[in-house]
Length: 419
Image (cartoon, rainbow, N blue to C red; front, side):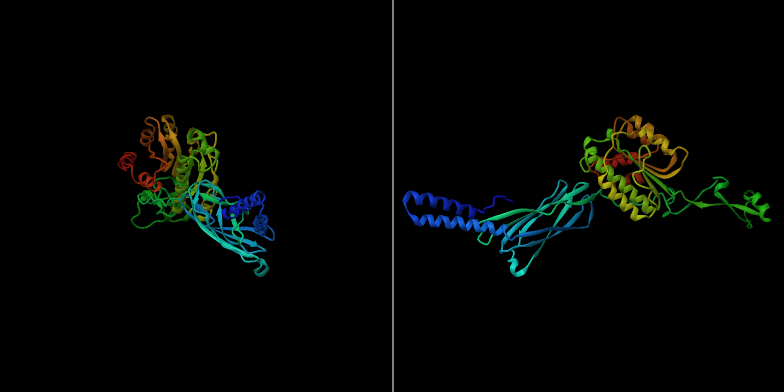
């Protein structure tokens, strides 16, 4: 959109006026002076008509939806309040888009009638954009170009300021853990009997014919004055943990500088958000932590969609950190037994795989997403009990989830190579 204040017609009029003034002196024709001055006056009046008596009261923007995931579409609407003393003809408008937002934010700006008759005018413009990068992306300002009724002059002005659009990581609807009903303890799954766990997991009930004598709870029987037997308590372990290794050693410097700049890190953020969403829907209380145990969000209770949404919005600005090591993960689980534990990291080596090995014994479903592995790192992790899947920026997260939830590492590798 050109910022030169004259249209091609206006530029031509000025050139002709100057030529007429030159020729009037050279040829001695006074009429050419009159014609040249008339043209210049017309151009001057056209320019003045766009500035004098013209007022813009800014722009009000709205987004639908107000928050969008990567890959989603957003309808942008803007209302421009304007008042002009003299009428204008059809012009152009264009909105400024940042990196990571794609669309065609331009169109025809309608002509305005004189404000002396119609008062102020409200002009509505709308367009659609697609979010390509995570982050808080500023939309605007809006640029409007108006032209005078004679088509000689134009005014290009920026209206309003930028308005932030929040782009969250993409959430993939992952497959339910149907092959592990209740094994991991989600409250949305079937609960399981804890057999032989000791007195803390037992409750006494009255003796019934056919009960084994070895199940008699003598202390409870003496207290109640009748035979009582041990009954296994049906309980679950509705806790899941997602560990996100954000240490800069795993990612490029772009991941530290700003969100949406490192494709590998973006795939990892999506994996973390998608796994957390799956666990929450299954009924787990989910903790999302860094490798040193620092909580990235407060623990999300099973089925709490509002807290899950708040987490996803917070992840819009999540970046890498300078320090951190996978060797810090195993001590976090010492002395505890949990349901699923998902670790999302970048490229690992043999030492990293060995450092993660102790975690397997503390989880009913240990899942490891890694951007890659040096040497036999991924094989070592798989042999140690992790359900491993190499995480690649171009992969579909839902396909990866099927691999880790239903197959071992070898099957996942065959699937990856076949695709």
